[in-house]
Length: 392
Image (cartoon, rainbow, N blue to C red; front, side):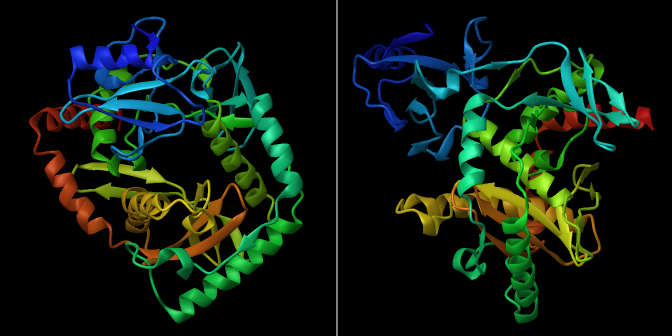
């Protein structure tokens, strides 16, 4: 069953999963028992029917309470959630790509066309997609009205893991922030034409795979198969807020690349050797200021910009599970004790620079030891490492 009324889905969940359940909503439309909802297939549901709409993004903003945007979730303790959305939801919109697909070299930036993945400058080119008309309209309005504004990080960073409170470092943060505010407000912003498409079928473990156990589980059980199979291009591109997020990253990168200043530069690639797992991952901070690496994170809005009491809790969760961990991994791969985290609101243009150290690495190391205590994942990890060794 792929479509049914809300009442019908309640009956289905009661019969197939649990008679005791809760329903959580994060949807703009008003729905009732007779509203027709479409099922979104997730990995816990098993193999999806050919005509099912798959969902592979974040499910919860606040687990059990607030779903990700556009979702209606039926859930119960100990059971897989049932994800639903309305028939005219942005989650059902598809940006289908046509051949030849568009690619961009990671090294020289040249645009390429090919029906299949392509290697350029000795590395795999990244696939691109033209942005949709909806996102084009969003950016036209954004660029016309945006006023970038820097604010000191103390407003949002108090109590967060790894934040450094140092007068001299905060002085550097303020100098960089005010300078970046001036650069952004005087830059000629150009609406992005493309977004880079994320390919989850990676050949190598990535920084993001070491930040989250569930992500690690999903990747490590399949990565050996991905390495043995022929790479395939993405046939669809994301839409809605996901597309806007990717396009916003593209806008920032375009702007950062155009900065002409002795104090500002692009980030340099770092390598981190994870002794607990026996693997090496790499990543590249977005930019640097006076040689200090800066990693960028965009959010819809800061907790102080909304009356939603849950936003501070959501921000703290993101900080603990994502931001602080990524900084820690980058610092472990460098000779620095701290770096900046640049956080930017996509709605208001407000941003801040937060100095962060690598204290989060201690908990991460304990987690990695627990990860490989599972024989299934330890075996898959060994299989992956063997394939890597055969390449060297």
